Image (cartoon, rainbow, N blue to C red; front, side, top):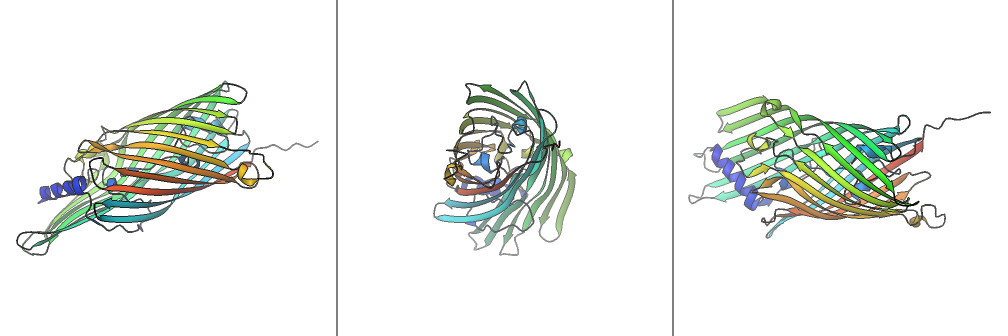
Length: 432
């Protein structure tokens, strides 16, 4: 029976993925994100960065911008006014539309996105710390079939939860051009997945299985940036990041129930499963003209081949056979921003910053040898508020995700908003 459950779930996810969409809001306090492609591993990896970088396609590896906190590269934290305190608080919303043939459904979600602060430490050094979503799991798949003997078979698979990341980073700038940074991260969260099959005929044995995961992980990310003046107003910046592969900890509870009498439950430390988070390498190049405009292109590659997800229930999805496999994902991102006239005293919208971007993202796993690809365009805008660099940033993400060989497609519209706060806290008063 258990093998039959695995084959059934694998076939549904790979070939049909979903027959009846019954998505509903989450109430357990975790990050809300629904997608049938979140069934594997730790779910869909969340796009990192704050609202300003997401408005430019998710770039940031080569960005040095003193107006915003850049969480994409720890080396960028030194690009700032040396007397300033900065913070960023974000919200996000998303409306996803799913379609397979004549079947369709949608799901809205609204979340607190991130909270980050940054301030200088001493000459040419700075610090930042914050919390942000790392991944999200959310899906419900149900199917009903009637066999030759008119017996109704009801199948269900569902999951929810996700992970967050708490991080702290410090950086130093040397020779006014080379910046080096290091970031420590603590990833944590809970994920639940379950599957069941029941029958209208009591002579058939109903069964179910599930996993409850409490996952944590400690990671390290290194970053560097080099800025080269091209003229008195133009600057070229190259950047790189590397996140180390590190083992996961926590606890995994697995249960299997056949009928009302045969039930088993196992409690296993995740460290015994040899689960690892993949490493990541990123590179970017940007060019900017003072505070007027900038353009950037980034490339990242994540390697999860040695994660061990395939052999561990809960990460490979409850009852799932070898349809999924850990792999190397990659992303291409490009973005542009422009501020017509930051000091315009007559026209407010000439002081605003406008952004656009595009991205192609390939998942860190494959389904029958295929990556789940996402492609989209982004738009963004920052409206200045009061003095200094205070502002409200908004962004729009329009994209599509799915397997090339599958009929099921996810079309989504994401909305990001953040409050960027900037103030001079470390100015020492002088008296005569």
